[in-house]
Image (cartoon, chains in turn purple, orange):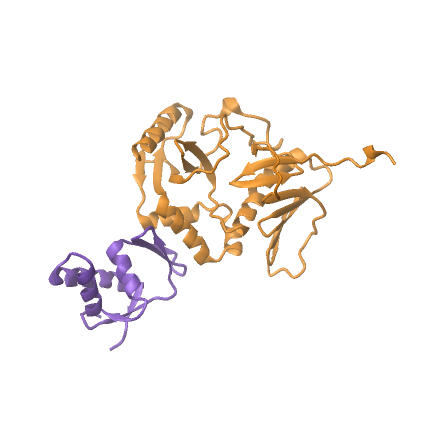
Length: 95
Length: 263
């Protein structure tokens, strides 16, 4: 499934997560025995996904909070979200 | 009635893992302290310990768990009743000497008590310097070149010995780094490498003391929060070094130089 700005994302609630310092975050899948780390931007995206959001909503919020232009932001967020979906950290909701 | 009949057991006082401990058992290797007027954080007493716990919610070949009570059995040697991260009661089997019991008290029993208190317990040693500490995980007295300071054997049939630290550090100091030791191999080159966040998390998770007991005593989210808290203040490194006495001083120098470079 390809990710677009209208794709709605939900967190995988089975993952354990904890903040590391002010900006980073670690996560763990007990089922898979896998560990993940997110930097400041990734952690903020994870935080925003406390409630379902579209990729477009995430991009707009990240553009407001970080110094990045919309085009760069969209490309980076889509790539990042793709990774999150592949690793089952988030799910793309069926449209 | 002669007062000599009623002889009090001597009481020993120690500072262990940041806790004030009183013990009826002498604990070689622990940092002694003066008794204080307040109630101690942990008491270690001789007493009657059952073979099993009534109402156990989880059991293993050598242990039972019922609420905040953990029963640990070392077959034919000693049993412990460890309660609420506060009390350790021990009962030795006939013929098992107190001096041999201390190793089990300071090892598995105290480790379980720390898990009960919700601590992150790593299996390693620590060094303090300039107000900070580093932890070194996975090493032994011989590999550290401490053979010349080898004290009394922990148990006669074991090549395991007490070593008193030359300058015991009783005051807690913040952990600034964890070095996890690995042996150099063709596929693993010598040196110090900082671990990424997920690798550091995995490593600290796996370096936990008695991980099976920890899994029974601490909910996973709590453990993860503890590891994350350590990662918030301490950097985790993998130190790959060659084994063998002839390399020891170089390894020590490398760790010291690296630690100094952290600032």
